[in-house]
Length: 173
Image (cartoon, rainbow, N blue to C red; front, side, top):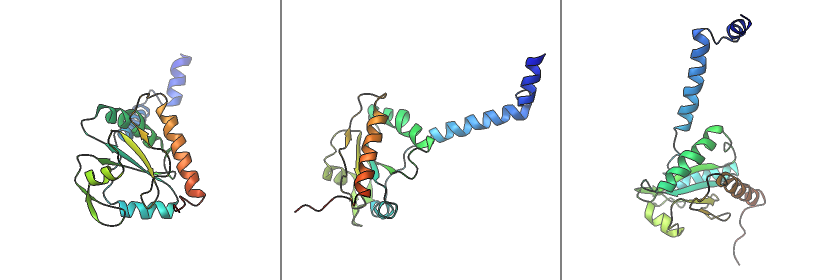
């Protein structure tokens, strides 16, 4: 009898309580279902990065790459849905088989041209860029451990953020 009274007080015996739980579960699942947005206009993203002082995390991936799917579904989507990256980085992806996009200098380029410039020959490759498209820290290439990858990603993000806060990359002499 006490158990039923406790369930009733928490609202779990009412249809409204179950509906609230189902809605929360649906919203959480929907948030996880959102893929990393595609980078279409790097010039615009670069301006946002410069204004916010946050790095651009650019994921080079391929639709037929099983490791890219693991990175997307098991690491990036959950981190993105948690809100952990909000305000820290701008996260986008470029598909190696993708079409054209606007480069940091405003010119239209093919995704392959952009990927060749960064020498991102393996997928997935995660680049940490400033507003001009320069790499801020060591990239992450491939994925060998789902358990440790979030820590590697977090460490690279922290390094990129620190470099930007310290004034960014210094021009080479």
